[in-house]
Length: 394
Image 1 (cartoon, helix red, strand yellow):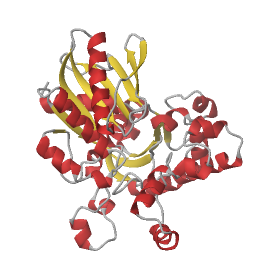
Image 2 (tube, helix red, strand yellow):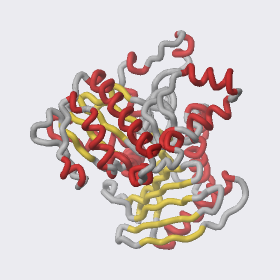
Image 3 (cartoon, rainbow, N blue to C red):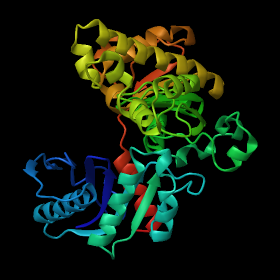
């Protein structure tokens, strides 16, 4: 079986999917799964298209980089065990930051990787681990071509004014600008919209990608015109453990009055804040929605309020609002969040059908709603597989 291997590597996890290729990329992967617990006790879970599920420990040791390599090696062995005739013809990777250099899927070599290394400070939670997986594949399968698919690429259609910060021009010239993220998710969802909302897909659309990482994107004619995330993936919405947009003066205060250095601030902004920080309970929306603690409700309320605030801003950037689309783990599964956001945004003409919303229907707007409201599962892995095949001419 000829297949494209898709990898999405995080700091302690490695998601993978194997897409058969026979003239075109298959709609669904033959095998998918993830390794969790890298850096501690790695465990791999594998699911086949037939519905079989396998779990086992990953034997590993050494540094975290060596554990990523060992985890990938174990995944290869597992894939071959379940697919004896497997022929991996390419590997596609989610890479969070492409900077100004990469606005389209790109074949990866050491020269490209060195450039991508320079973007690590812009995406410290993701970029180093994305690149570590690329180098691990190169070491294990040196003859397999690899393609990087960038979360920033979808947003390169934004007008210059939407990408600019009000900083001295010398910093802008050096690349300090708004890039936007979750582009692979937005790309996939945007391609599904004509079938779900018809002609409205060509108009002013806002997609809310809500998960542990959360952002929103305004589209016009299916192209990105504005996004909530900017120079890094910490701006915009409140997230699982990330602050989202924060007055820069708060950081100056924490540095000058509380003695926080760059490392402590990074930890605060990326790992200790968001739903976890506000609730003091959990970063998991499911846990917070099930909790009766007032702190949990405050965290959920703030999360929804920030979405509604950004929705108004993005509607202005898009020139109106023809549709609001929810995707991502929270967006697809947390009906109370969708309901609360809709209630806060009723002034935009949004009205949802409560029964359809509870059932997680594809369309959850009422007939009288001025804007369509849809729930669309995302599939970043299939976008990566398609882009990898197209880039390599497979």
